[in-house]
Image (cartoon, rainbow, N blue to C red; front, side, top):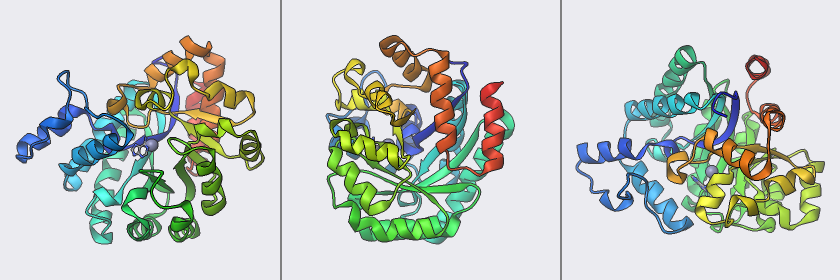
Length: 325
Ligand code: ADE
Ligand code: ZN
């Protein structure tokens, strides 16, 4: 499983921070983060909202472009070791200097440099999708969208939104998504992870995404599944994340295969791998074991992911060759 060349579309940069990396920074900066770690070196949280709190606490010790560059390198080394050849990382100007444009440009330059070095040294290609955080509110999202529009190009290729799906409504963020789209960025948004099918439908109507982060609860609404097919919207499915956070009791109960059976385009990602004790290899092993996915199924999933990637066509062609090597 490890050696299968993989395309990953849904990976939060800060969510990929190894606990020991964050623990080291906390010690250095004399910040007491002891409560966010388990005894065996993982991240500790009770439920989804507490996960978001722990995530933000962990992220709070990451300061400065150099630390984000180191994190980018660590993330890409880990991904490459699991066969990932192309990854879209969610980058958050909120955590990189508070969505201030001048600071953001400096953070981005450092992360890009780290990504280019990883491409040269490890053969993994990264592109950035800038994400605003839903529970930080629509005004903060406007500042993030402005950073996104300013830095859109061949490296920053998309715009999205994570965070607490129950905060505000998708329509409250329409300005930000329109701003990003007008700058040429492709659109995704988290929806239908903890929110139900209605959350996905409202997000489609208000924000016009071509991909949905998670979207798994669409399975409860057959007409919505039809709409996803009709609009050719691809789901960034993160099975391990959903099971670890308790959206589904076990992988057996996860709707990934039922969505595929309905003709919905799905892809496989890790979301925040150390938070959910997962890797791309583990995701594939789970799917092979639970649903009998074989090499052909994984090739199909990776092709779907590559088709839905936000990169330019020369990059897509280059990655296509890597997938068939
Ligand atoms: N930010 C990081 N991981 C997330 C998730 N699984 N859902 C919403 N926001 C997130
Ligand atoms: Zn996510």
